[in-house]
View 1 (cartoon, rainbow, N blue to C red):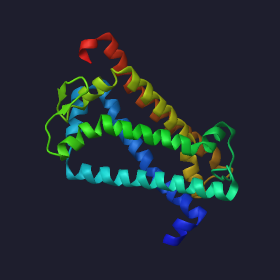
View 2: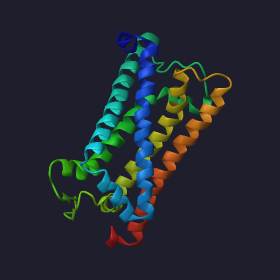
View 3: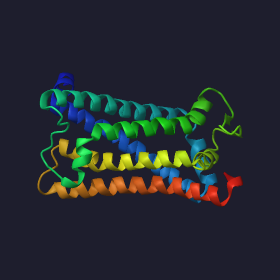
View 4: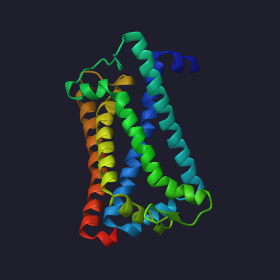
Length: 236
């Protein structure tokens, strides 16, 4: 079984599909969590406190991180193997869809954009929240010298998205996520054999819905807090 997953093209794609589920879960979970911040900073902070340096949160973080890491490693490996075997063609699929042809041909580039956004997000939030608690700290110092508690995620959101450059970076990240998911979600199901004439249009629709929902919700948080910072600079 291990040899099949490592040496077989189908096996590597199966690993990509399964590990891709971790990325989708990561995005959906954080999307649901972050959208709360728009309506209630206190409710969002309560979630942050619940997901602090607790054993269940740490276990969940490690599992999701491992899944995303496997996805990245196999994406690079699969791309290298495909290029060696078929030149510049990256993903061989049985069902072709013109609307996502660009995404399907640039999944590695989009993957690096998504990974870069995750790393920036970890720096802006995880490193100032859960990591601080793990290390036994009780406060985080922001770039402007202000100090916030590691459980005050609402303050971190207000500060981060009051900076125009982070707004631009995050929106670019979200666009990359949208393209990555429009191809990745239906390709994930296709690998398991669902992409036939009946299911392909449905999978395409599901992929577009998931990608668009993730994009809109994440973008809404960024835009709302940026607009609030413009309306009330002292509140940022």
